[in-house]
Image (tube, rainbow, N blue to C red; front, side):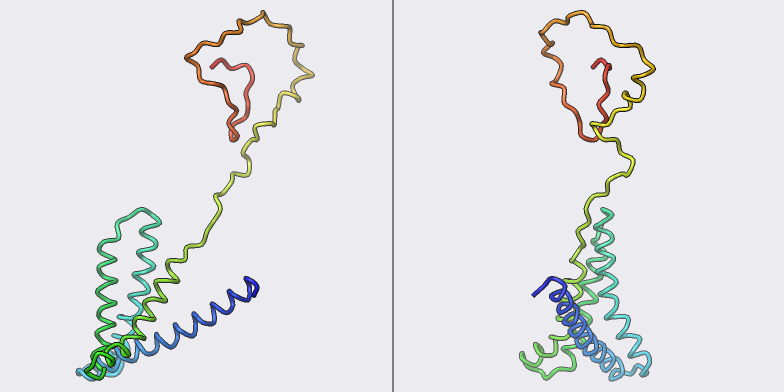
Length: 181
């Protein structure tokens, strides 16, 4: 299977799970709200608020981590809204362990899907400046016709003082001739 086909299959699965789990979670929150005295439209407003807050808070945590900001309060809110969604799923279930587990599946699947999607940070290569000089490029060749020829220098001692570190050409800096270190 090619990477492109695999990505398409993953997207279809993601959309199917997200749609079905989201619809079930929205419906459970709506039905619970209406069963406890809220008008029909407020039931849907509660469902939207509870379920979409998990997605928004996941995005907010990702943005805060990327910018080096604290995530404590936002993480606590995410846990609170996830528990609220889970409670709405379980409240309408048959009062048994299996009833609660089966009722919790849509909410857990929706939250797991949000977590997986939001934790997939794209890998971006570092940007390279366009006008960065290369270490081998020299503008001296252009000036060579205008400058007097270089005379041989006095012989220099072959002993280099021990205090100086070895000279290395840095790859992101142009090599400059004639500067005393």
